[in-house]
Length: 372
Image (cartoon, rainbow, N blue to C red; front, side):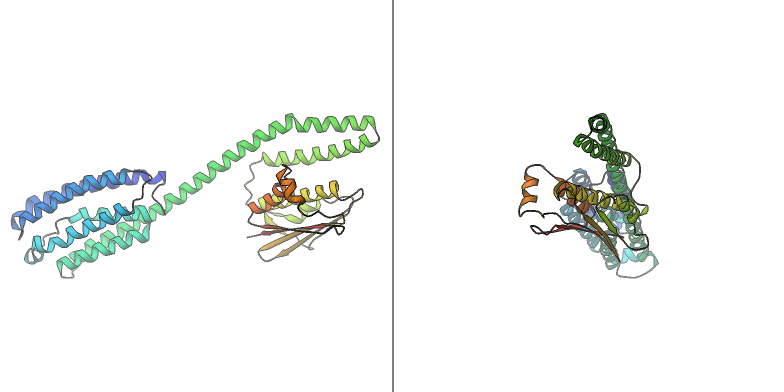
């Protein structure tokens, strides 16, 4: 954990308030008890040191973005020195009469700081160290002696637990903000696409049908792309979070058509919605490449394989294959069909894409994605 989360800023301020309040309480006890100390002057010097360190620590902890470990270590060491010095300052006889250590509750501030910065484990470590010092100074184990150590341990555990909750809450808030921003951007792109690309495709479809011949074929292809793009835009503007499971086979079967042979398990292949969308988009891009580059009447085969924790989808064609270095050249020229439409989608899911191709032997695109 780190201490830079916005939710913890009020906690650091509360810690500063606790430190000053504990200083006032410890100072009042020193004023009351110092005449009975074995070394009262040393008690006043420790109180002065506590005042100086309280203001110093408050200033150092206030610095945001800096490495707080040196301050945390120094904070713990200062508290340890003041606690251990109390044995000599107060005296063993006075402890038996119920006297407190000089720092009294003030030495709990480093414990809270460690818990606030590093969570429950570091807070418990600091509490154990200072609690052991307190017991050592009193040199006896009793209810009153253990109570202080137990209170610090409980405080460290409680603050560490709250820190864990705030960290998780902030992560969720950041993720929600990211999803909201992405949703707004998709909605903007959908509007732009609707106002430009979709209208052009619709016009090409109409004009192609009117002209006939090869233009009619172009119009038909434009109509197919318009339908696919409208479906993509409609999905992009939805509020689907991608957590609900859908049947991947059903989504991929929608891509089957003339020249495309589809093979899948007999039963459904449930995957998260975002995984199904990404795999379907990658397969659609692969089939589009087959239509463009695999000859006049290309044939393609789509195979779906489901294994525990992994789904593999293979798209194979009987085209001329991909020349060596062609994909790198296409990416450098700005044609990102494979690198973004296929590899990009699958890599975002933590999967991998393997392409096998040889001149005259077709191309095989294998998509492997993890499924939880």
